[in-house]
Image (tube, rainbow, N blue to C red; front, side):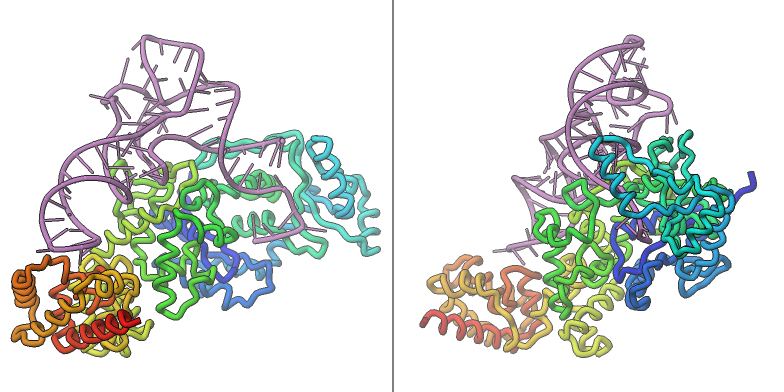
Length: 529
RNA sequence: GGCCCCAUCGUCUAGUCAGGCCUAGGACACUGGAUUUUCAUUCCAGUAACGGGGGUUCAAAUCCCCCUGGGGUCACCA
C-alpha cells in the first residue's frame, strides 16, 4: 500500500460559539494529523445559511487561534481542495447526487411526508421495525419524469441494500456492525437538490481526501449510512475513530449547551461558574451569557486560563500517555498521541482537575508573561489605566511577587483590587468587617492604638512592621489574632490574602493610615446605629 | 421502545488486545499532620475501585456467556 498522507478534519457549523467538547474533538484531529506529519483541515458546514458568517464563524476561529491549533486548509488560509465552506460546494454535491440517481443507488421518493410519518408511527405502535415503503421505487422513468414535470414534491433517498450488513473497524472501538434490513432509506437530498448532512459530509470528506474521520461517539449511528454512501459513490472508505464525548461534571451525560442553566445549579460545576461570575463581572462582561459559560471555549480565555492548561485538561479527557504522566505541553501530547490509547467510555469534565492543570502551568509561566497577562486583565477591568505605563507595570510585578501562587488564572488578579484602588474606593467585605472590626469589644480601640504606632514608624518595611506589631501585641498583652485580622480587613477589605506585612509595605504608610482611618470611621458610624 | 456504544477508587485514568510481575499503580478531590501567627503554596501520611452471576484455566480486573446499570442515536438539523 502506498503510504498516504494523513488528513483529518473538523467541520463545525458556524453557530457563534465553540463548544469545549467540540474543541476536544478538534484537538484529537489536530493531534493525529500533526503526529503523522499530515494535514488538518477546517471545513465550515454552513448549509444552514441564515446567519451572519462573521459573527458566527469568528468565535470558532478565535478559539482555535487562542489555543494555538493551526489548520493547514480552511477559512482564511485556503488550500488545494477548496472551497472550505460547505455552502459553496454545491456543484460537487449535485454531481454526486446525479451519480447516485443514474446508478440507481438512490431514488426519488414522492411519498408525502405525512404518509411517511403515519407509517412510522403505525410501525412504532405495533412494535414493528419501520422501513421505507419504497412506493416510488417501482415507478418507470417516464412516470418519474411526469411527476417531476407536474411539480410533485419529492426527496431523494438512498436505496439501502437490505440484504447485507455494514461493518467497520473503528480505530477506537474495534469492529462495529449494523444490519441494513433494519435501516430506513435515508434522505440524501431535498427535491431542490440541496444535500443533507450525511450525504454532504461523505462527498466533502471524500473530495477533501480525508483519511481519518475522528469524531465524537454520537456520530457512530450516522456511520452505516455514510459507509453505504461511500460505497455507492465508489469512494475509498476512510478510517473511522469514534472518540467518547465529553460528559458534564459529575455525570455521564453529554455536555450540552442546552443544559447550561442546569449546570449553573450543579455543585460539581459550581467553582467554574463562580469564577466566571467573579471575573467576567469585573470585566464588564455578562457572566450569564451562554457563550461565556464553562461549556464554551471563550469562557476559559476570558477568565484568564492558559491555553496550555486547557489543552492539557482536554487531552487527558479520554486519553493518557501512560500510567503516571499528567502535566503535558501540547508538544508532548503531540509527540506521544495515539488513537489506540483513547479510552472508550465517556469522560466527565472535572473542574478540579482542570484547575490543577491550570495552576501547574501558571506556576511554570515566566514572570514577564504572567505580568503581561495580568496587566491585560487589569486594564480591561479599568483597574489600570494603561497597561504600558511603567508605574502600572512595576506595581503589578510587586503585587505578583506578593501574591505568589494565589493567581491561578489571570482573572484572579482582579480579586486583588485593593492594590490598585485608592483608600476611598476600597470595598470592604461587610460580613468580615462586622466580624473582625465592629463586633469584637475593643477592636476599634486596638486599631486606633496601632494606627498611632504605625504613624510614628520610621521604617515601613515588612520586617520592621512585623517587629512593631509584635511589640505592640506584647505590650498590650494581646494575641496576634486580636489585631492582625482587623488590620488586614481595614487595609485590604478582605479576610484573607497575601502576607500581611509585605502587603502593608507595598501599600505604603500613608495609604495604610488612610485606610485604617476610614475603617475606624466606618466602624464607629456602624456602632452608633 | 429499536439499533449501537460503554462499565477499574468520588473524578480522570494505568493495567484488558499478547491471563500470572495486581495483597490493582498514578493524578485530582477529600481527611489528618508538618511548614506558613491569615489564605495560598510546599512536604508527609491516610481513606477509597475491578457492577452481579455463571463458565474456561493450575491461575481472570484481564478470555467467553448471561444479567444489571449507564449513555448515544433514531429529522426533508448539523
